Image (cartoon, rainbow, N blue to C red; front, side, top):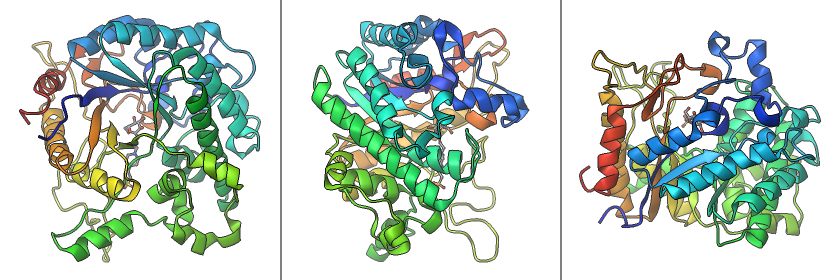
Length: 447
Ligand code: GBH
């Protein structure tokens, strides 16, 4: 039956988006803290306070318990733990994560930690960031600190969240911090350093974690859906989904996942770039593609082909349901992404993010009636239940546990199961939160 008895129902957030406390207790600045001061963010909003989770962690974990979550996926702020990215450890910052983990466990919630969710230390950015040949060693140094401190209690580790966005949005099209536009050779080199960083971190975790750990990356899964039931349609969608897209390779799935999960560059990249591709030694390849335990993937919608006449892409049509961020509502993505990823990478799949933005508000009766979030999630989870009969799916993390800072979009967009009033920091569990609680209690049998 669809969901296994030990299915991990949870919700997610990321350090920079919820914590606030941007310079409390010795935290160093990251590239977002700095960029936000230079007009890159809608309404010039900053995450200096955000949802103030750093100071309200216990209250927030109590709300997670109220939602019945079995797991919480959070990320660690590198510059909170190592203010300069390397060197001196900020014990108070590290203690915050240790306390969070204790609080989660005391409330019966499994902690799932993402090592890097985009908030790169500014001090390291000043040294060239991922362009610097030492950057993978910096990442290792940071990983050591958090593994030594938390791996006695944290079993699930994700190295990079959506590396596509880190490299593509941050350094190619320049819509995310640090808002750079780098050349293709630079991007290839930076990507190579990110792979080395991933590999070194995985090696360290395997050799030094205080208990058996489950490790993954968490890219986003962007695919094309088969247009009908035929084998041809399946093959076309599958093959197109894993194309590395020429110079847009940072946004592809195959670039990140073939290297890490299969141990080679995608064939079409080898054809396209030949000798331009950074080379790895055999030892590096072994480290970069060392076996992982599951395939974590963020799922929001599937891609469309551009129309020939400049009209809608094929994942759109006139009047198509779309979210506040104008993302199409495509529940089928939740069926096809796990199916494609299992076929290609052969590992159990965990949905590390899925959700939608709405412009919710607190209604006259004091509640948040987010019926669209319920319907959206219901549709996506039904597809997940369908695919879980065919491929191993081990968990689902709703994005997000609470409203938060949506990067360059600031605070207009609300993704949470819990509403946050940014004026008062008051939290209100939305209708969708109570609905999700019911799904968890029924282990999805009521979908
Ligand atoms: C995630 O980004 C982030 O991890 C999270 O921090 C953020 O708050 C949340 O989602 C909401 O935005 O190639 O056409 O399939 C998601 C951003 C959305 C970017 C889906 C890629 C797919 C493009 N991603 N998108 S496509």
